[in-house]
Length: 250
Ligand SMILES: Nc1ncnc2c1ncn2[C@@H]1O[C@H](COP(=O)(O)OP(=O)(O)O)[C@@H](O)[C@H]1O
Ligand SMILES: [Mg+2]
Image 1 (cartoon, helix red, strand yellow):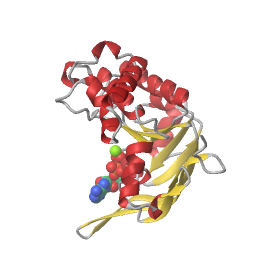
Image 2 (tube, protein in one colour):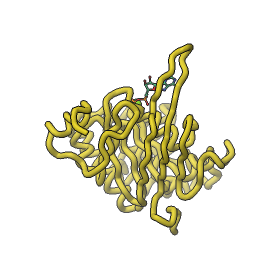
Image 3 (cartoon, protein in one colour):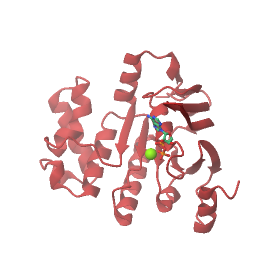
Image 4 (tube, protein in one colour):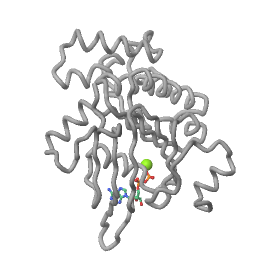
C-alpha cells in the first residue's frame, strides 16, 4: 500500500500562513511554514505557547483552511476536497490524540476504542475484536470494561492511543499528549506511541513541551512566532534547546 506522494511524503505543507482577525487586531498564527514528512517519520514540534502549534495541526487535519499556502496529505490537496471528503479523510485516515484524552465518559474503555469504527459502519463484533487487540497492545487488556473515570491519566491516554490507531490511520496528530501526565508516564506514553506507530508504519506529528519527549522523535521542528526556527535532529543538550526555544539561536 503506497499512499505517499512519489517523493515519499505523507504530509506536505507549503508556505502555510494563518491570520486570525479579532475585531481590529490581526493575529499571525503562522507565517510561511513549509515542511514535508516522509512515511513513518515521528516528528516532534516544539515552541513557546502561542507560536501556532495547535493551529498547524488544525490546518494539517483540514479542520481549518490556511489563509495562504497549501497542504497535501497522501497526495491529496486539502483545498481540493469537499467538506464531506475532508470529514472522511479525518475519520478514516487521521488519528487524533489530545492532551485531555477526550474519551467519552459514559461508555467503557472498549466501547470508546470501537467508536471510530462503529461510526464508519463496521460491525460491532469486528470492531470489538480489533479494539481488544489494540488495547492489549497498549497494555490495557485488563481494563476493557472500566469507565474512563476509573482510570489514571496515563491509562486514559493509552486508551486514546488505541482509539486513534483503530482506523489504521496514515497519520497521527497529537497535541501535547503528555501535557497532563507526570514525566515518567509521559515518556512511557511517547515510547508507546513510537512503538505502535513504527509497527503500523504510521506517520506521527506530536506537539510537545517536554524535551525528553522530543528526544524520542526522529526529527524536531521548533516553531517561533509562527515560523520554523529549527528543523533537524532532536536537540539533546538542554541549554542548546532552551536557546533554540527562546529564539536566541538561528
Ligand atoms: N480561533 C482563533 N481565533 C483567534 N486567534 C486564535 C485562534 N486560534 C489561535 N489563535 C491565536 O493564534 C496564535 C497561535 O495559537 P495556537 O496555535 O493555539 O498556539 P500554540 O498551540 O503554539 O500555543 C495565538 O496568538 C492564539 O491566540
Ligand atoms: Mg496549543
